[in-house]
Length: 330
Ligand code: ATP
Image 1 (cartoon, rainbow, N blue to C red):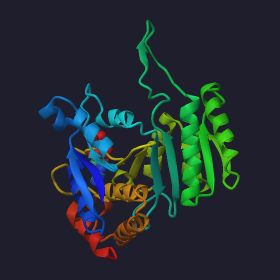
Image 2: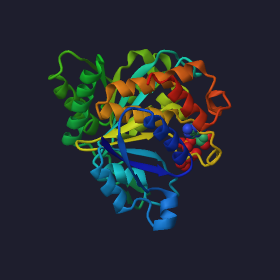
Image 3: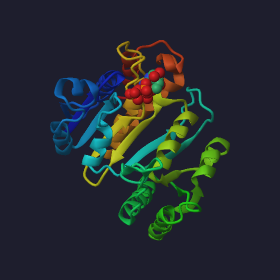
Image 4: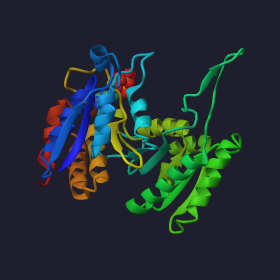
């Protein structure tokens, strides 16, 4: 049995979460769910976007599922605060195409590992006389652990190559350190190919030759931008899951936000949340169950019949989740 903290959040976060829990409920695995609060509705009722209680629950659980939250300007971001509180230092973003889904390329399958705790998102900003500055922090420790994670990840998932993405020709000290650390860590993984690329070239190769990538490891801002470019390559936000992993905790969330424009209508695509649950199952080492859910969803996407509006269908969120369950070999 697994203890799972469930944070529905706002808008479609609540709807896609219900769909994913419905799919997980069909598995022969016992989950003990503990609901916790975060986001804008939480702010309205509790005066904070992330109560301490939620952090406590996430720390107690075997894993956390996070739907999506609306972050009103000026409010503390619940997800960024949670990532920091749990020291979730790596953000895993698969970039994978499904044949039934309109996508720029077919058969794309690579993964972006983004450092989640420092870089230009360290949050150290200062107003100056001329304007403002932001500090880009790259530490040896954080670079080493993300690079090590990347090679371990490649080893476990059977991937062949890890590419470090940086801009060391301009950011000589910070990204020089990142690149050097990458190659130092790589020495312990002689069976895995390595290379490194500048981030601007990488952005271009995503469009001209995405098949050259297998595992990408990069710093925070570059990873953020490339991940969204990756989402664009393979059919949009409704499909892209993510995992946030640290030494002790794992949190799984779709890349999309709360989409207020379609919230409450029951038409949100549940795929990203279901695939985030698949990532959670892998994290819990429930590999067979993970494969079963992913295969079932892939079949639903490939058939393209019982799918939501954004995928060209007219089924509801729950109808699509039910179709996934139907395809599972239970
Ligand atoms: P937030 O402010 O919470 O980030 P947002 O609407 O600005 O919300 P997203 O929710 O990430 O940003 O998505 C942008 C648009 O993409 C949405 O308005 C919606 O039209 C579409 N979209 C995102 N996720 C889904 C989904 N799961 N199913 C269908 N459409 C989606």
